[in-house]
Length: 166
Image (cartoon, rainbow, N blue to C red; front, side):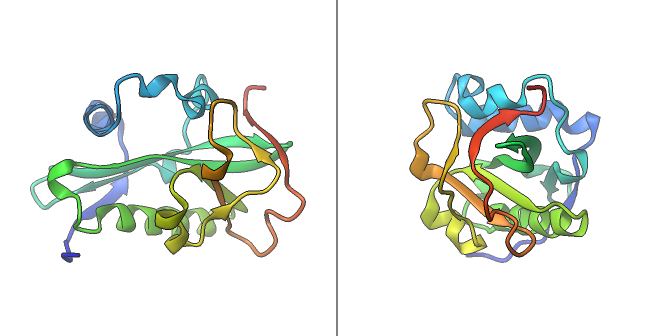
């Protein structure tokens, strides 16, 4: 993996369309029909945890957004989407964004974070399959992963993942 220097910053209103274009480029058409998007509808993202990674010329290399959700009543962060421009993949951009998100979430006293993704990849950041946590269908339960940002933060936290509006 090539080491790269990027400027990581909180996403601004001016970044919104460029970040959306990146998500459109990186994810399949109809991405907004996924269950995780239904949890985000009508809910503001956690602004300090929505990050962009830009090169020295201000070109967007990657981005991540995070949203509040409830898991059986307990508040959690739902990480994602996270995306890296195809021309920047393999440079560690996603790892930089992920590590900054986790560091910021801890510093802001969040207790737990979850995502839907591949366990072999996200396991390197400490994410593990969550037991007894159910995302809305048709999410594969083996892809529902979580990380305790504070010791024991997932202990006893089970149930359906619901929107903050529910």
